[in-house]
Image 1 (cartoon, helix red, strand yellow):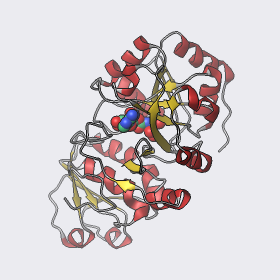
Image 2: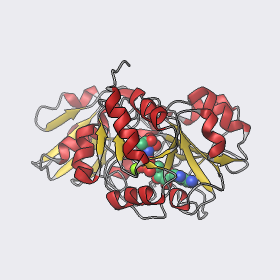
Image 3: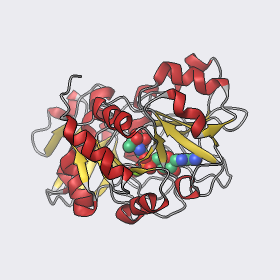
Length: 329
Ligand code: TXA
Ligand code: MG
């Protein structure tokens, strides 16, 4: 990806962060709402802008792996193994937090989420700023994450001091989150780096799903990542013959369904990587079109689609405990 970044805007953004402002910026996953992770009042602005509960921890974004020891302690070898393969990129590691980290960043927990993003704009900002940027997705709490600068503006308006537009996010779904604070690695949120790939690099199995502990894991809130329009899932077999009420839109990936000419269809790509890229922008666009209902064809229940299945389940209000690949329960 090549991108020419106007230097004055990056310098301005870094200055805004230093002076306690909020800067939204492109990353390869989704847009982030950034603040200086060392400034209590700046971090408080993130929670206010998103209307996010204050016990919900934030991810700290860094430019360089050498900064890791300023934020985390007792860093296991597995963290370096994963970092070497996947950073910079769409992977967040949960590690034991350094004592200097603000409680407001970690939601009062002993652990911290860290990510080195790959997007050149995010990297330029992080390098210019030189410190950790706390950044959740730049949306209102429980809404769909933004994958464009326009979507950030629709979500947060003038509450953000500056939005750095780096074009549409190329991954399109939030990062994979792995908890490395226990004896075995655990997947807390599936992302487009899938569990099988992570297990190959680590050479060990990764536990899946949230433990019944007090860890405030991502997306546990009912209707996380949800459009406002009523959204439901449907199998391909059911969708072939379903009689659908007017003002329903069917979101499909399979070519069989494209043959239906009697209903309103949106065709998403059949390849999971491209599907993920377009999912949130499609749901956001459909949400504006006043349909009574959005129906989404259930994609294949295999590892490459795991993160997509997870977000679809949440968008439709199905509560999952993030078991491997399935939508049942
Ligand atoms: O792709 C991403 O991860 C994007 C971009 C901007 O980096 N960020 C993002 O942040 O999705 P957010 O805040 O919307 O989701 C991060 C999730 C939260 O749901 C939070 O519960 C979880 O990460 N998290 C953060 N720190 C944690 C911790 N110490 N323990 C468990 N979960 C944590
Ligand atoms: Mg979020």
